[in-house]
Amino acid sequence: MQTAYITHPSFLLHDMGGWHPESPARLGAIDDQLHAARLFDYLLHRDALPVTRSQLLRVHDAAYIDAVEAASPSAGHRALDPDTSMNPHTLDAARHAAGGAILAVDMIMRGEAANAFVACRPPGHHATRTQAMGFCFFNNVAVAAAHALDQHGLERVAIVDFDVHHGNGTEDIFRDDPRVMLCSTFQHPCYPYSGADTANPHIVNVPLPAHTTGQPYREAFSAQILPRLQAFRPQMLFCSAGFDGHREDDMAQFGLVEADYVWITEQ
Image 1 (cartoon, rainbow, N blue to C red):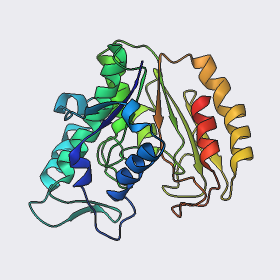
Image 2 (cartoon, rainbow, N blue to C red; image 1 turned 120 degrees about the horizontal axis):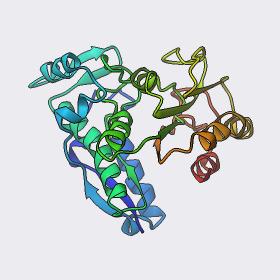
Image 3 (cartoon, rainbow, N blue to C red; image 1 turned 135 degrees about the vertical axis):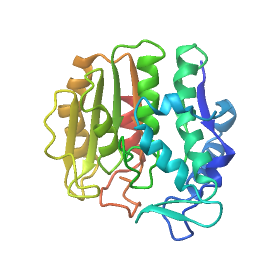
Image 4 (tube, helix red, strand yellow; image 1 turned 30 degrees about the vertical axis):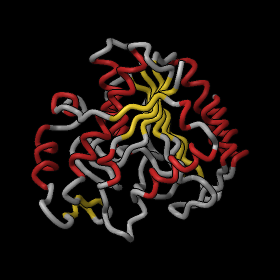
């Protein structure tokens, strides 16, 4: 069974300015590498569908959804925080990003794909139930996890977030929902300066110091995350797949390389 590759043209139109590190070039780089590795044609390609309001309401407050929709500009940019702004295409892209994550769940549950990669923008894991931040508007992985639980009747799902920044939005949304285990590795201290003090039986935060490289990262992952995941026995596993912990990424100061991301995925 194939891997589904889900994306949408709107993701290339969301643009927060030429200076901004979260840019359309991110998706171009993924496509380039898939072609270079001769993998592109082996994937099951699908266009994302837009998320519905009822699907967003599982993880975001109605007033927040209204505020994001009202903030969408007809021209130019509108800032929701110092790092996070909208252009006229952002709202459509954000709806399709969350909808793409839902499509991934549906395709796997219908037996149409073994797994799925959603190549989307804007990202989502910093978006809380009531706040846009850190380049994020709707929490895509949270929308997908809630859909798996509520629409498909799963009882336990897990989210592994290996972005170099703490998945604070995902934690905010699921902190009181024991059906969801969140495992988040992240550089600390680093934006958004949260997560190191969390005490919750189904939230597994692993703060690591700057300059962490592959071997200590793997040791921490193996000791602190894998046993908890195995004991939890999730029926579906989600990955918030941020690759900004790579040693060549200047968003933070981790020292991971390609082999480390392969190792994480294989676990």
